Amino acid sequence: MFFRITATSFLLFMLVLQQATACEQTAPSARCVTTGEWQLNVAIGAGYRSNPLHGGRNWPLWLLPDASYYGERWFFDNGTVGYTLDPTSDLQVSLVSRLNEEAGYFRHGSPANIFQRQGIANIDGPQEKFLFASELQINKLDKRPLALDGGLQLNWQGVGLQWQANWWHDMSNQYHGQHIRLGAAYSLENRSGAWQLSAALAWKDKDLMNTYYGISATENDGQAWLVSASWQPELALQWQYPLNASWSVLSLLRYRWVDDQATTNTAPFKSQNPMMQEDRIRSWFVGLNYRFF
Amino acid sequence: MRFTVVVFLLMTSCCAVAQNEQCTAQLCWQVEPTVCVSDQTERQCALTFNLRWTSQQPLSVCAELSDEPLQCWVGQTSGQLSHQTLLAGPLQLQLRVDGETKLAKQLSVLSRQPARRKRLVAPWSVF
Image (cartoon, rainbow over all chains, first blue to last red; front, side):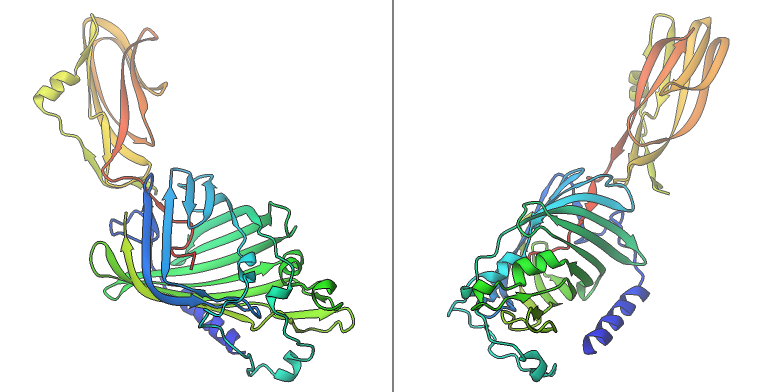
């Protein structure tokens, strides 16, 4: 309920805001880049990205890169390679490819992880959540495949918001599925710095979810767990305050909800997935950013 | 409208005008400006150019822009026109006599700023 109210308020807030953010403006904008040149920022600071899996290692964030190169049609942007069919169009259609990020959550635990959260009792109702829960550490699971995704991306500007829609498909035949993501971002630059509020909703199909978050009978003492397609909302806030031409203060915050429900063949109603420690991924970072070029 | 609003017309000096004049044995013409300077990276630029031609003998002359006729003069020794066009890239301006191209110039766009694009992926998306 809290999530629904928060998400609805956030979307309404963004919808009523109006601002033109086209690249024709002479003022520099983080969303606009000069074509034919690399853009490289590296931020140093502190933060982490949580791992929702039992035994999964959180990512401590000390160095964050932000690298992109845009040609007239080709682009590379933080790991995504794309080709835009018509860069001058208001609705930009691009063919895109990148590594699927799901496999990254299945790195084994480490005692060096000081951010590891223990225990997940919360207000969702422990009786229901732990009806079948028996913690399953990811080091007992088979290795999850690293997949290469390809698909289509749409970008357009509307009502002060930058919209982005993605359809991704497994090109590497690892999970044999697809996923979709729709996101909107509102950017604002004023004396207080450059702000970006964004919200997104991802849908991941059953094949993807079962490949990564399903549990086979051999992994769990003969008891298999199945997961269904999943809706995963996300909220994020970025703030950047320039100190001079090269240095700026950077703050990032993101909250992503994931599906921690699964079913067994013997009890086909949903229970907490034994491999899931929690149903959300929290990320934050605060630091200093240096713009190389 | 996606064409550039602000257009800087290149001011040509007397020397530049002299250099800009192009002659064959019988026919001379002058076109200015031939470059449209936009203040931004938009692909289209509004250019108004003036064309003047002279010859020693009466001629039937047609001015064409990318093979599209602009104006024709019959049995004249001189002529001029002013024309506005939207340039999305280089265009060829030609002066034809009896259907044969005698003189040609290229009209082009020059941007004062490097081309820019919107980023299509959110900054710091590795986060």
